[in-house]
Amino acid sequence: MAFAATDTPHREGIAEVLAKLGAKSDYADARSRRQAAVVAFGRRTIARPALAVLMQDAVALVGEILGADMAGTTEMADHGASIVTTIASIDSRGPITDPVSHQMPMNPAGSMAAFALTMANVVVTSDLPAETAYQDMVLRQLGVRSAMCIPIHLNREPFGALGVYCFEPRQFDEEDTGFAESISHLLAATIARVRAEDEAARHRRFAQSVLDSVDALVVNLDARGYILGMNGASEQLLGVSPAEVQGRPFVATFLGPEAADPFAAFFREILAERNPSGFDVELAAKDGSPRTVRWRGTLLVEPTGNGATVLLSGVDRTEIARLAGELLRDHDREAASGTAAAPAEGDAAEQAAPSPFHPVGHPARGSDMRSSPRRTYQYRQLIAPLLGDRLPARNRFFEVVCEDISAGGISFHLDTRPNFEKVVVALGQPPQLCYFTAQIVRIAERFDKGRRHFLIGCRFTGRIKS
Image (tube, rainbow, N blue to C red; front, side, top):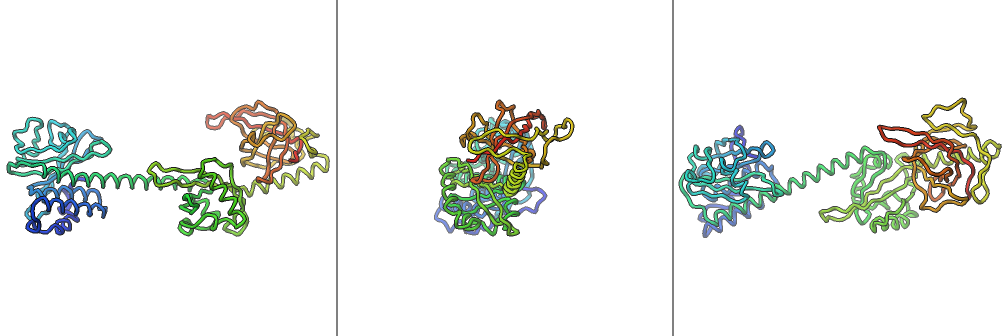
């Protein structure tokens, strides 16, 4: 952020600040002029020029108001191991000329700026050659006799410093240092704000890139249910860009009137942090076809106190519902022909079933004994251990990632070896779920990228009419 020795010397924007101050005779005293300079610089920070330019403007303004011969900036380098101080002259009209940079170790005994940064306080001297706390040979070689150095810290860490220098002995009083500190505080606050805004923008860009890389639909809503943004998968499925729907209510934009009240209840549950299980709704896709989407919601509370938002994540379950429907038709057809498990009436009951099948990835012994073909079915479905002859309670069901399915059975993945032998499998779309009883007939240990898991092969033994 220092003066660039290779650039054309100038102070972009500082001329406007000084112009607003007018001549010294326009003010009753030096204090009024300094107060006006603080106000003018504060307005300058609102315009948010480049930080390097703003830092130059700050030290040039301090040097001009205090009538210094030279002004300079110091910045940290080499991860705090050294500092770079750039000093330039101030002529009678105010512009900075002939900047020269020097790099030196971050040694408080060898530099006035390093000493000020270490002390975390303004350092002044009226007779630099007589100083014993530090020996700044660079300033001595430039002929500096009196000086003021104002350190700048961000988050309690040294960031840099402003310095003004005179060739003649001079006593800087409390009003001089107070004015210089006021400018440095405005500068530090601006740097901190710009850094925070830039960091927040980087986080938003990163978060958006992550959301755009996932296949799930993601929509961000404010606490009123209005759309703040959405990811690429949502844009692709729904056929609208984020700019088209930003600021519009989610319900009126994507849901039909019949879904308004159920979604409102679901949304209130999210805001109350009650973790609702999900909300299933039919949306019209870009091509006009109906798509069944299951939404889940997460309440996001920003630590800055800017208000909570809701992150909706949706999974397109249209294909799951279609395959489940096909499975039911296959199962009923084979049951009618006597080649599959007959539907149980009332309570779960084991019926005649086809021979066990071998899960995907495990070589079969002999020919595949299943009477119906299997198909890839890598979706999430609900299962629960069957410990009696009744449908398990709702809170006993949990999601598993399936591998394949047929009219005779299903396979899915578990992180641990199961301690049960029978399960209930829920297929379809809530609330229209069909429940099948199944017997675990195969457990195959698998390793994926060093992670151990189990592929569980089951055969359907019956159907529960809930």
